[in-house]
Length: 480
View 1 (spheres, one colour):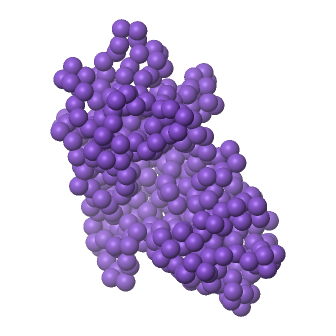
View 2: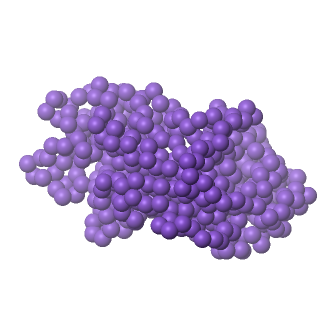
View 3: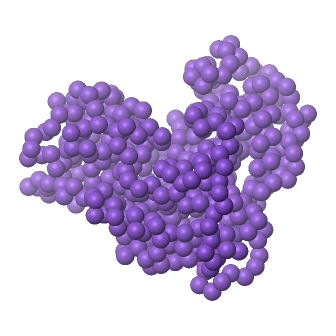
């Protein structure tokens, strides 16, 4: 898993700040003693916490996103389709890093007892994808334009232990876990006319249990559980769990969401501290000292991987991105990190999300500021190579949209960008208008700090491609 003594101790100095920010423990409790570092069960507990993090986080996400009486906005009851109808504006604060390129059609459902059948209408060649995530956050299948085309299709999602016969014309996708998260995205330009077309598609997407397929199925009434915390961020809820609470929930979840065959070495190791798939957690096997220390240290180690990622993160021209998302194999710490900062990430063949928080102008990269002016220039024939679409989204320092006179939160080819005489394209990134003649290429910024995120959906393969590094993102340079 690459949780080395050197990497952990190198980041130990930052654990105090991490702990205080997370509201966990005192500064003196964050020091890691040599005695603790020399214990085998300490390292096993750290690895177990990291291994479990996606499954536990997915469960808390499911609870929050399905704890409603009816589908609305970003939430929908278990086993029901939710449909995001329009792009959020600058007042939207429910989810960080929202997008203004695709409308979500989503659902959480449980295939432990029986399969669920998903029906998608003809998309009329519109770009869309419908990734399905397991409880471990792996994208186990991705119906959509890239993989299955845009014609009408019906498929059944079956559980890990299911065997049976499906109706004619229904394709099977087998989930490795009981819990499934369908996180569909449909491209939309955001105009009134295009909203109407996408809404028509969304309304024709259905989700029903296999036993109800072909009937006039109506989902049972949903009830709201008042005990579920709907205010605190999911990550904060997970981080607040004690080690015993955390591993108890983890063991319960593994009863219907089993580890993969490739996880056998990790499973064998976890048994020494009371964690066995299919069984309740045996807390007596986890030392009391570790029960107190592991959650704080393990999460700090997960976040440390963001900086010491051994090649998992590309850093170029002020942009950072990874192509190791969606499918993780036994790279458990990468899986945990993506869960913490980008839950629901696609496979790289479907989307790559380069993010930039600092300008690459000069020797020292500095935070972007709306008091400055920046230009990002794509040379001739070097626009982001994507078969689906590309865009650059503007966020404030908290990863939310920025209010601006154009009501423009992202910029892309759909703005009919103006091309320079030499074939290059300039994107003007600043707070004030660059002038009426340049507003087509203007991405409005706030007056203070901001963050840029590029999206390349269905990135092209071959030369040039972001997937193999043959296409390089140009820097956003300060010009003022």
